[in-house]
Image 1 (tube, rainbow, N blue to C red):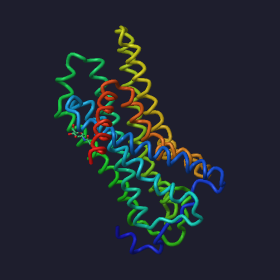
Image 2 (cartoon, protein in one colour; image 1 turned 45 degrees about the vertical axis):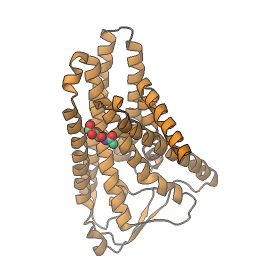
Image 3 (cartoon, rainbow, N blue to C red; image 1 turned 180 degrees about the horizontal axis):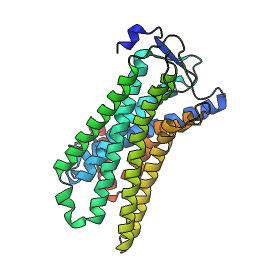
Image 4 (cartoon, helix red, strand yellow; image 1 turned 180 degrees about the vertical axis):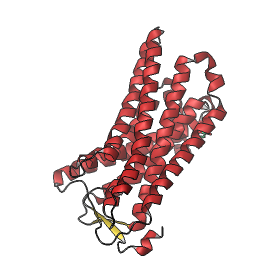
Length: 312
Ligand SMILES: *[C@@H]1O[C@H](CO)[C@@H](O)[C@H](O)[C@H]1NC(C)=O
């Protein structure tokens, strides 16, 4: 983080989402509700999978990892956004800004690889059911999780390598509610055209690439389900469409933010609310609460939590 020393800029100013009192109030209620729901839903998922030996299988481990990551996604930008909503002067330190960018890209990368791992898990379970236990063994599962963190870390470090030494000499106003590369780079006092291209290519490639892989895998799964249409197929189809909804809601805004060519229109700023606030809350709802085994285990965990509170 040597860039902080060379730069004249020690903090950045957010313009935030809106100046309208009514919309601020609406966003405040919406974001706080979703933030609390995400914290409770995702913690409960992690706790349930960890404490129930019946759920110690690859699918549930991946689910718990996704929930763990979603706790991070929720906490990256929304607490600061909620805190800033009604403030006139919204600032973030140079260091804070770089830290936010670092974690956004680590956690975003991990989440993408985990979503792909979960699609692969469903592919094997539905298309190769007889080999499921052989293919999705605990080793492969650990490998997926390690790969997710490695890819996330590498992606983020590459992105940051581009920006830590950029000269910031004065302009420090970001028309956004969080720090991210596309807008930050534009503030640097140098010709940033090539840098913008690199950053867009890096994030665009990883997000569009993952999105295409996911959509293709779900199409293959759906075609397989329909070919062997049996009693279970309508349930499988409803599960799959729920997964696809999550994928589209997660990647849609993301791809838009990184590849939208018209920065003068602020649509991307509002779409970013989806990934900051809404999708991390939807994952436990869609992946977990629709799952019978998981629901039973969660009720047990909740009862235990309540009764241990009564005793103490
Ligand atoms: C993530 O997955 C790994 C590998 O299966 C597992 O050992 C670990 O407990 C999981 N992490 C969480 C938070 O559930």
